[in-house]
Image (cartoon, rainbow, N blue to C red; front, side, top):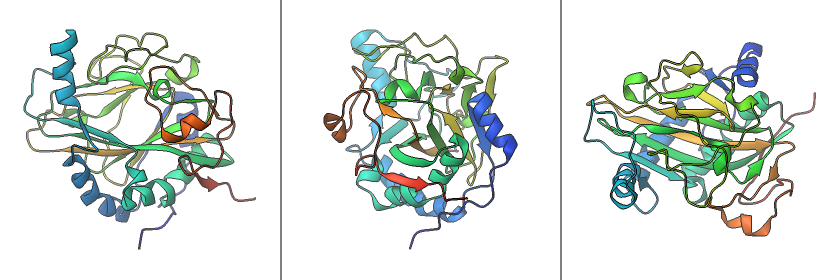
Length: 293
């Protein structure tokens, strides 16, 4: 039996304004703890399975050796690994329940002022203790085969996260420019081959920049950012604390497919063309509809 769909509290008007104006909002104490309990074991199982999780620390080392890339490394720490996977909801019951029946879809719909919400993908993001790799600043939209304003990412911590363990930094208002930025490898600023878009501004997560927003978060909190918001994350300098998070991405009314060159596709993308409206599909299911007033 899975936990319920209801958030622990309503989203406030000021939180909606923060998402709209800043491109990111911190929602403290909104996710029932039973969802965290449900995901704790599956996340650990997932990162232990190299068939469904990529070691981005090893990727950075390979890019340095093969292409002369410079991984973004914090010299103050070492020994850990940055692990990531995507689309776990497709093959794991707990991830599917979280992405489709948790409060996340409603939260996304309220923040985006959407009439309905479709699931796009999920991702596990783990920085083990001593992970030196930063997450390069990037924009999610450049990796998505979507275009439109109602696209967002929910970031759900399974551990307490602060600046010392790899908190995410967001560039306030960067979603308002209308710019689509070229995707990178996450552990270097080098662009993915064959991709398109504007160069990402030169910025690091620990920079003293007046428009960088960071949050101290705990399990039960959710951070939601617009898909066009630029963001990156620091290293995990803690020798003992992990930084585990699940990221679930949603889209709403008015969103259309935009097939982007060089970006990994999903199975159903062979069935759609740029300009097609996103509709209910097993690979992009409808997960929330606004109730009638």
